[in-house]
Image (cartoon, rainbow, N blue to C red; front, top):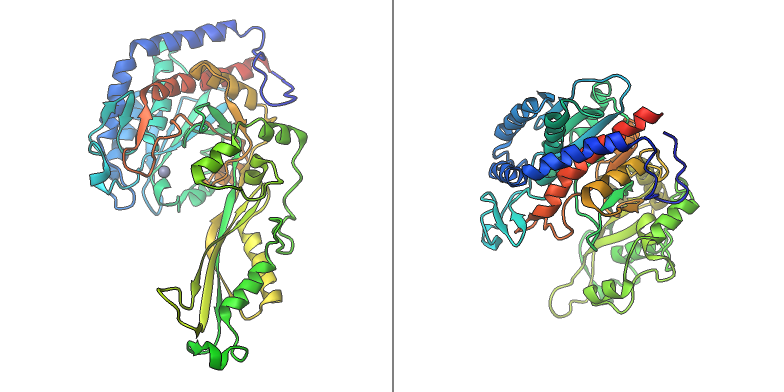
Length: 474
Ligand SMILES: [Zn+2]
């Protein structure tokens, strides 16, 4: 069906003739209600199995278990080799003429130390106050397991899925996804889909569900300045020997001005002005600046002239730390002989980390030719248009799974390897998190609210249902 989305989501956009599909979804949701306790119990069994990519504990075992589970629920599944931990790839029986969704998740978890800081052991899942506490509860087992249970419930209820599904689980997300770009590039054919949906990360801080349309990229680098061959007396050599910290200070001042604009030549070349829909959507995001100030004990925030969410939707240049000279106790009137500064720049839209590091290098060569630029890698941004034809069905799906209208978020402030879908496969990609905002991922007492996990299963089945409806009326 063709829908014109003029500004964000339209809650009343359910097409005529969708009542049969609505019924089929209700049947799946009715079935899910009868197996809620069992679903929670099965997640608990899954969470008992460690799969820590950082040191390999349980990885092979969990990958094998997933292959069995996914084959059991009707996805043709196998392990796919990478130079690191394997991918688990499952596919539903292909039905011609129906859209194909690629669900992505990751079966590895963060290490659980420090064990003393957990109120219950990380691999002995415990339910307290409506939450399941365990490593991986939110990040990401509770979320992709919800998708799997959604597939199973739909298969059990109707014997088939309303759309085609490719299910990809990575084993190295928690160690920076070193092999996913290569894997996706190598298996473009196998991964052919119409869209990608990832359920990872938390919902909005205010608890509201979100559909995320992109992430910022990042480039990390270090600038190193060298002075004399040793530290010197500032009285005997000040004004004589150059001070590498001053060299960096002057250089940094040419890279960003006090208004917050990055002044590296060409940096904004691939940043387009935001369209009205994006601006409206960003502005509609709830934020309470006073609350943020309170939480951070700040009287003022940076760049007060810019709307809050615009600050997170634009490139940002951060000095992470400066080292050199003496910063210990008391004074030492030393003239340092070397200095370095570590920085990152968050990227948006069509910027690439390779291009930006070139621009940084050219800028440094022009303004401080003796300073060395050391690149520390990066990740490209991703962006899916807010008026993508999948935006409305996905919003409807979240609404029927969670019983609330999701917020549309044009771009996450942080970075994820979402570009592998948008850039390598050229697909629209959406992140629909199921975990609570205080899931404590990567931290002790990681958890997911039981209700959000169950609503995740409902949402997963609704996603397939609403995507299936699109095909029928087109
Ligand atoms: Zn994580």
